[in-house]
Image (cartoon, rainbow, N blue to C red; front, side, top):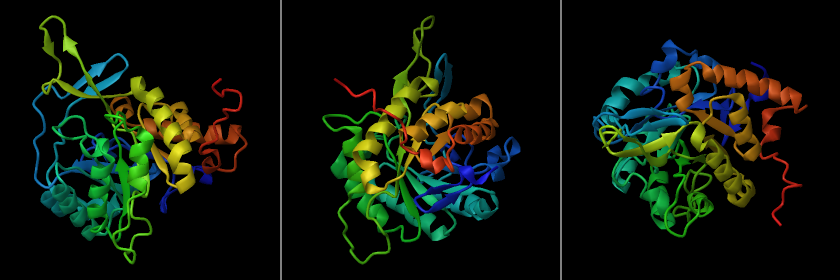
Length: 329
């Protein structure tokens, strides 16, 4: 792989901007049986909660014409087992590893964040405040004040680890995605002499799956055991591109906050769209179910694209979409 794909994600050095999304590549490195992890940019672990979770009842994954519907329910071994059985393997994974944190209260997030920071082996942690597959899974991502309260507490226990915040694609009420993004970045500093260079998010992950539902018309039963779940794949990609574009233009560019584009990245063109819209990196999730080796194909396509654009690096194409002839009238 050429150096044209080298990426700086809030100070985290990646060999490429292509990451594996949380919950789609096993708890840590299980996908190594099908994909050489040393050839990609990095991966995000399973979202970890304080206590072990079995997840939702089946069915938990349903294929659709335009993507995939899932309601896994944050199944994971819990933080104690994760630190004991998985964290020691992080240095040997071969790529950057980003831990993922989930919870149902501020105390939940703080407990897991503190444990991951103490491991001192994660390049960053991703705060999953936007899971649509569990009760109250999106609560923090829908309220700017709640989100800032959460980030203040989590930041206090992350002196050594970058903080990425994974947002919901559909904020509720009168707030927009840009409002939520601004709240995640502009957290009032409670400790001016603290170790973190910025009190809010180091990067934004946009976005999680979109709440959705599927029904079997013969049995008249919901296809998912939890009734509703999260839609991912090609169907959500254009929506995610717009969200990245909006947040980059309204908030992220001015504050130098990197964005990780998430949603329907199955081919290099999808990744390139995210880059042009303002993303520094992308995550591949549903694509791994279609072809576990697709990240390598995406990276090869991006290399050729950068060369065809006569760009010195992929970084020079971040936010480079040309809207000069498309202004609203």
